[in-house]
Length: 224
Image (tube, rainbow, N blue to C red; front, side, top):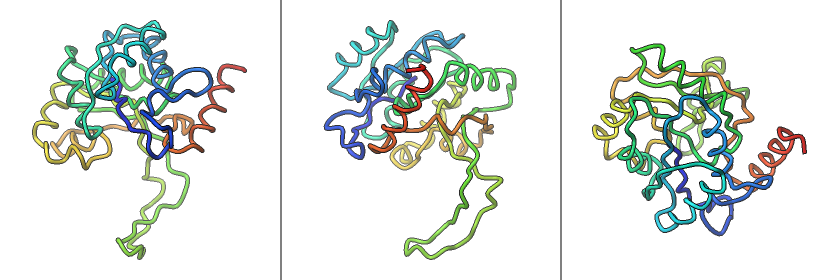
């Protein structure tokens, strides 16, 4: 499942972020190519911009991917909830189209880790935090300094048991516009979430600077 309904305002894209190009492909296309190459992926569902479903289909077609396209919601978790209605598998992988550097290997790893432990509700990609982290008040007064060795910067893909994610969304409908990743909803429902260490290169494109870095890394990866 690919969440691809972001507005792109912070990127200054002048339209949906998912269609912005980086090194010859749209952000969405890079994710589609990775999911197509990953073993064990039975179907792909894309939650795209509500009035751009035809354009999303075109991107998928050019990438050689068969996909179901559903309209995204006002918030990321609402987009995921919409896409979940089209999911028919026991496990589901949620990924942000704004992370074009995802690899087939990483997708396979989070799914395999979840699949081999029936007591785990989800497995999420994340990178160790290298900066010192400060928790601050609204007035920016430092409240505490968490132990850095226990801090992780969360990414996608995130793999879940489909029934558990559906139940967590249904249990916390008022939180869909607040949470910043789907694992939070599952955590609030008591599900155990594990971290799978991923490369910090699996960055999220939010700003023009992020886009430039992503283009550089994609060019480096492809050897051009």
